[in-house]
Length: 202
Image 1 (cartoon, helix red, strand yellow):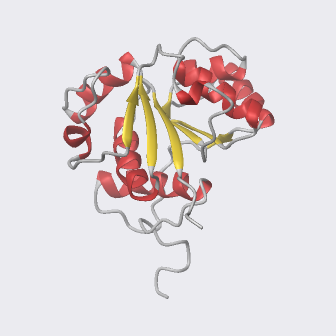
Image 2: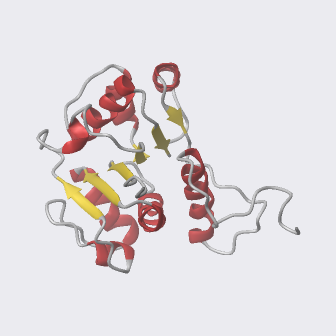
């Protein structure tokens, strides 16, 4: 019996932390057969500022962004609701919003679907599928905290972009990968980026 196709939905918003999206997509491409990606206009601007790369939200050059081809990554228009992730009948293994802006989190928390990212997230919550939000902004005000609480109560996983240090990272990429590793673990993927705590010498 053939194994089931593994599908993932990824939203990239305009929060600072484009490196997390870049590093996560590179790893996700190793583990998933189909990855449906939506970039907000602000995400494109942030990627240009932080990573020094020019991206086209209508025709994503995956090789430019990730440094290698990844044919399993499919770019979706952020305003197109006639795409698979916008429907509850589309079966997938989860959705990751990385990085997740506080504006996006607030809209999802209050059931406001004004683009494909928020609609796909809303679908995940109603269908009880994994939804992982990776906020980077700090500090959080009371409104943000309440939004995070509401999202957690609705079934989402809040995974702040808080890098770990116990593995003695040597670069910014190493730091980002500690967050990527935790995202993969939450998706049930066996990652090999970072060894678990207290297993470094085993």
